[in-house]
Length: 503
Image (cartoon, rainbow, N blue to C red; front, top):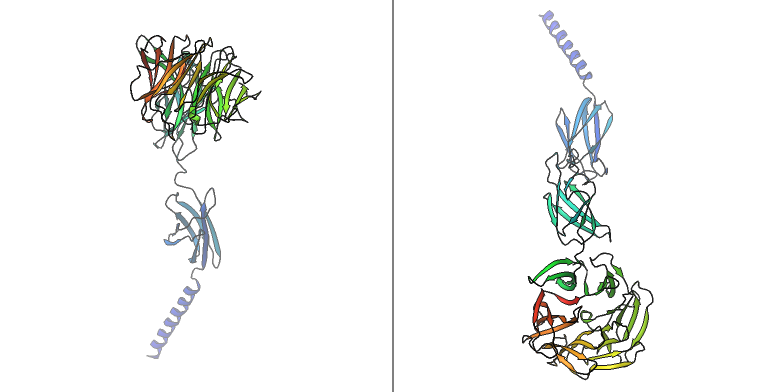
């Protein structure tokens, strides 16, 4: 019996010794710390999920991108970092007893493996092609290896004024651009974007539009809140408008076109830095140059104001309140040549072909108390054409032989704060006889005839006609005139058009 008890005790002692040896051989423990940041900016990534395999323990990064596993048995591990919008990242870690292992994750966004679109290939118009119409169809091609949607930007520049025309967010590879300029070489390029990678730019291609058709009619159309200048031809036989060309942008307020045949330029008014200045441009709208700078065009109602070329096209006359200035077309030589004696504003001026006579239309600050008269270059008054009348007037134009003066006058004598006219007629004043002739006797009732100009051969006039409600569409007409007849034989030329010029 005692022998048996002794054997059991020995066995228990042996088991205790073995258990003690197992406890001594347990694995050590360490700590894993780390941080998760963006791969490029190194900004911290908050709330990234950090998983420790093969234990599958999980923690999340704090606002500064830090994380920590406090008790980790020593050994080799793989740690993953996941976050929506980023590619999953893996880092190895070897944990030693009582050691701290630090792991850094630089996570890339989930577009990092996305490939850019191919370089756009320009198919049409063919590089270097000439004689293109003013509406051009552009065709190109590109593809995306990840089948992402491609958005294109088409850019056009010309060789005359470097104006940039840009068409953005195009999803088709065919686009028609209209209202280009005559006789201009254009350079075009296409950019492809998948909204992930850097934009891909095509090679540069060029084409040239056909020669300017030499339109002789110039006028203004209203687009949104701006005046836009156009030129057009008119087919008398078919009664249709031809070769209509937009000369100025609808993004800039430009008005009152006046062509000079000697300089082959168009002068016009434009809003610039909250002032109105004189500018010139080529007949196709290119090479825009500012003429006035120090003394802008100013007076009553800028929409009604007018200026005049010298016959040889080297100078321009223009008003500034009660003063009349002359300036060279390049902006030099500014000179005051006349000032009204009573402080009246000069709203319109016209310079005779031989430059011996200047016609003026003046008014007070309300636009009324109108006077139309002529002066010589010394400022001496030559002829009083219209004065001591009520109502509005304007549209003065001297005939090439200095015998006739064309103007408009509201015979209703109506006056109000916004300058509305009720019954404006066109008149011709004969300097030789002193007689005045009404050219609007067959005008439709309730309309106004405005802004008359002589035709190039002075056998006809061109003018604007519109309802006197001040909001209806304006039309431009031409009419033969006979001082001995009441029939003015009107022909409508252009719709939604104002401020005509015919050279």
